Structures are given as structure tokens and as C-alpha cells.
Image 1 (cartoon, helix red, strand yellow):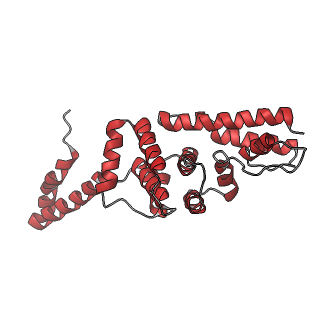
Image 2 (cartoon, rainbow, N blue to C red; image 1 turned 120 degrees about the vertical axis):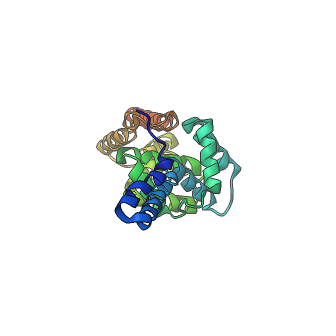
Image 3 (tube, rainbow, N blue to C red; image 1 turned 180 degrees about the vertical axis):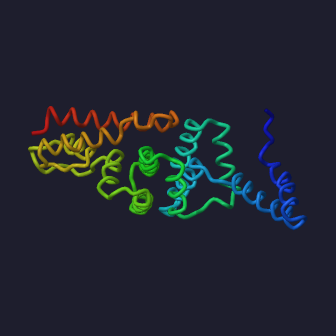
Length: 244
């Protein structure tokens, strides 16, 4: 059966409109369906919402970093393909209907993405902010705002952040090496915690960051999850051998 393109539906709405209310009914039906179809055509998907969040994050510290722009371009091209990526960037530039506030953008993500896959957004934003080697306070605040809007606790967000931030503190204790401190930081922990706390944190993070949870997502997002999952795994194995 041949299906008519939905953009012509507004014209066919004239028929029942005319039947129900003459010209007034026909015009009312036309305008209503045109509005519905317009909203459908202009609907912002999660990809565009993520791109807008990336743009806002880049600007959050008051400067435009070329490394950050390059990472976004590379990520979207690898994740969504050259053609779709180009369209998304054009839409970002020309689509005035894209919201500019975090609450509206995260609402789109919550509607379009399964809750179990939303943490990949936080991962990407932290990787973007850390590409220049440091996460500024304004960048961290922005990402935490996004995370809070998605329903993440501060502890959970800190655990994700630790996947991208190496501890710069040099240990003053002969008991713990810098490698141990860094490995603990990956698990969201500090020196002095018990081995059972290390195991508990590892299990929670391994479950949270397991790539299998992203089944159906793009290769770019899955590969990012694999990279961070491996970091968690390596840190835990190192602590099992060297942390008392």
C-alpha cells in the first residue's frame, strides 16, 4: 500500500474539516494538522540536544578551546556518521527552536534515552571538559547541573568524574604510592579505605559502566564505555595486588 508523505496530511485534513464545519472547519483542521506536523519536523532529537549541551559546556569557562571543538566534531562524526553529523551541526547553527537551558535539554534526553544509557552523556561531557588536561570549576558545575537534572547524586557524578581526572596530589605517606592513590581515585575512593570498600565500589562501578548496558547505542558511545570500564578493571586488579 502506498503511504502518503506526512507533510501532505495538512491538505487532506481539509476534507474532514469541510465535512464537519464547512470552510471554517476546513481551515481549522488545516491549521491544526500543519502545527502538529511542524512540531514533528522541528522536534529536537537526543543527538542535537547532546550537541547543544556540548556547545554550552565549551563556552561555560568563558573561552573557546580548539581541542574541545575538535573532540566534539570527531566524536559526532565517528558516532553518527559524516552525513548525519554535518546535518546536526547545521541544525545547531540554524535551528532557533533548540532550547538553550539545561533543564529543557535534559528533558529531551530523558524522553529520548533509556535511563540506563543516560550516564553515557555524563561520560562524554567529562571527557570533553578534560581533553585539555584539566576540568575547570565552571565546567564541573555545568556537568553536575546536567547530572542533577538527569537524577544523578553528587557521589555518583564524582565517581564518573574520577574516570577522567588523575589525582595531582603527591602522597606524603610511605605506605601508599601515587599509583595506589590514582587507582583508588578511579574507584571514587581515598587512601585508608578498607578492602571491602574497594570491592564494593568496584562492583557498583563495573555494573554502572559495563558496555553491555549500552546495547543498541552507537559504536562511539560503546567504545567510550569500554575504555572507562577497562580503566576501572585495571585499577581494581592493581589494588587487589598492591593495596592492603
